[in-house]
Amino acid sequence: MSMTITDTTSTGMTTIDTLRFATAGSVDDGKSTLVGRLLHDSKSVLADQLEAVERASASRGQDAPDLALLTDGLRAEREQGITIDVAYRYFATPRRRFILADTPGHVQYTRNMVTGASTAELAIILVDARNGVVEQTLRHAAVAALLRVPHVVLAVNKMDLVGYEEKEFIRIVEDFGRHAEELGLPGFTPIPVSALVGDNVVDRSAHMDWYDGPALLQYLETVPVGVEAADAPARFPVQYVIRHGDERYYAGQLVSGALRVGDRVTVHPSGETSEIVGIDVLGEAAEVAFAPQSITVRLSDQRDVSRGDMITAGPCPPTLTRDVRAAVCHLAERPLRVGDRVLVRHTTRTVKAIVKELGGVESLAANDLGRVVLRTAEPLALDDYAEVRRTGAFILVDPADGATLTAGMVELV
Image (cartoon, rainbow, N blue to C red; front, side, top):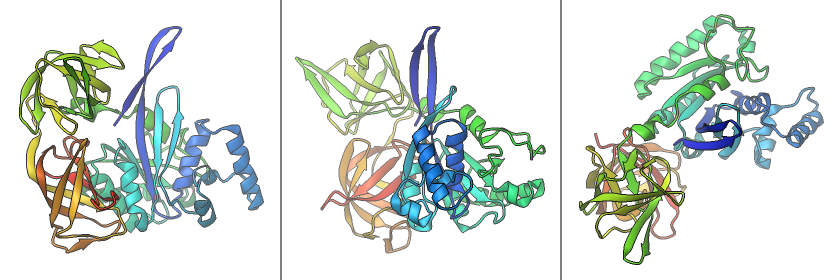
């Protein structure tokens, strides 16, 4: 999802968009250092934060600040020297604002990467130039492919330790490219970097004149954002019904596409149709609304619309079904088993379901990637996750205690 933030200046109105991106890398690939370098060199670190890092680095006998300490915020992370949980960092440049999900690289924290990358429009997969593509690299690529992250950067780090050799970079890019095609990753952008030194992170490197592409930050500032949500069909899950006299207003977030006054719409799952006669955005009347704005909609006639219903417009309706097939990542320590009774939370709707199949296995353990077939008690209005990420995603919940069990990505085709 992307957000658009409008700033008023003395010269007029300027629009600054926001990129959500996630990072992933194997142990000792230098991911925390890369993120720290990105924050430091883009001048996104407060003075007291930098002073704390300098003190901690000096206490360890290091001559220069260890920028990895800017991101490994948990005490356990600092002590072990690894990233455990997803940490969200916020920073900005004059061209764009960023929400960075710094995710763990260990296999036992795959579920954390899924959480961080689920809303990202870009993923940075880090590779150590000395080691090349390893098993965890492929797992990270598989997660990016599974989640249909629109843009993927292959950051080949520690180029200084292989003499900045172009042939080493090309070897890794070609190896990753072969695996990416097998995993269903449609494309990626390779960038050679040295996070420790700062080569090609914020500024172009003088050590790699053979590379004519952008530095990492330049790419992050210019990659298209919001295209997926804007081009997708209109999907408006109803979150609240507001009654004012005889009028009913339907409030929620427009998760994809656009809605306009005068649009003919369909309400799912009932299938009833109506026409939009009013749209409010931030309390002001508007003729049109775009994803991901939070809006209020008024229809031309009184319909039986409630929380969990979905209002859609356009020629590509969602699929109304009780049979759900999906790719999944199991998140809970408790295994997911064939025959389990669960709750499916899809946008603002929650329905009961039973696990019918698990891709040929009897159960899924924490961090397992797999496939599931569900049978729901009531129909859901679903899109293929590859087409509309927000309405093609769901979570499975334990009906006994409300714990999140599994993240799912709908596969209608």
